Image (cartoon, rainbow, N blue to C red; front, side, top):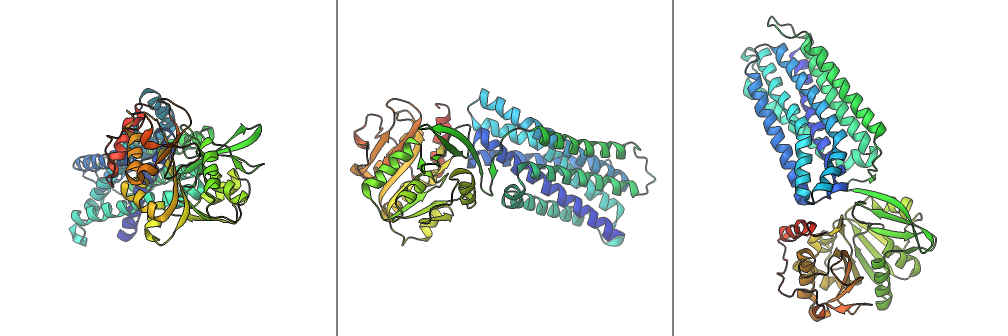
Length: 495
């Protein structure tokens, strides 16, 4: 009997950890469409998560001090688990309007990230409160007569809930989101919490005890758990927010537009801020200004081997590949699931035979394959509307200089002296390429736009050192990545 009860307690702890961290991954993913995704945003949300878990453990310990019977401990644990399911269900329902309101009232993604962390932290705090209560149950039910003590119980419960958290934080992005989707994953997590509450309450009801306990508590627990499931089902049925095509790494959003009088398809990882690629399937051409300029520069140099760091919809490499089948192209993108989405929803055709897709971190891949040489490189890797900063350090650009003859980069910024984010990239580019550094802007003046950088005299380019909007006093950016991250957030105030 003891082994059976212990196994049930371990299952409850495992489900609590799994659902709690799984929901946090869900929250981070769906928040990215409003506030973006970066190390700082993820770090802040995780900090709020850890604080909530710590508060729950502390309060559960305080609560367990007044509990004197095993039955009471289990019913109380079932109660807080029921509230955890309810709190998470409510958080999922209000997250989207809350993010919309915060995005409208503040330009700081850090504040929004704190709000998301606090919103879901309530449910996590309730869930972690159950762990000390179940530990108290085990210590009261199986005292030292059978070799079980409080220290062993506490260590075992914390270890199992941590294992559950590990499963939730790894299985969610790698398996659940890509294969069953965002909403189905959410339903699974809420159902897991509700089931753990039911399991805990059911076990408590079966415990005999002389100590007085509330007769209505089991009914309340069951009702709360059921209401969480009902609220989640209603939210999923009524939710009209496009959560994109989910992959293990990110989410991609497909929309349709008209370009040059023809139907065009757009793809983006953050549709609220930018469109990553635009494609006209009928003529197999991309319809973004920067893509058209990149193709002209490629045709200017007529390379044999090309590499693209960042795939997005693969509009530019696909146009080149379809119209120049003699060229060999390599596309490196960290999202290994991208080709299937691109073929089905964006290109609406198979990827060209002369394109090799590599699902890997671009800089890491080139570091591990230092012997590779290319005639042309296009750096086009973004996180939302900002570049992947590790590709623009002095070290990275110097390495790329050894890898490719002609290099071009696409950034989104402002050609303005006061815009630190853009100026940091400009200065690094000029530091590495010197008088060979060229820049192409679409508009004059302080306007947010795609800006192209070249290490050769590309079509429409001007020497970077000679343009008025280049600040030669700007400090260079080494592998101290947080420096560019700081410009990322500072620049948000000016966009």
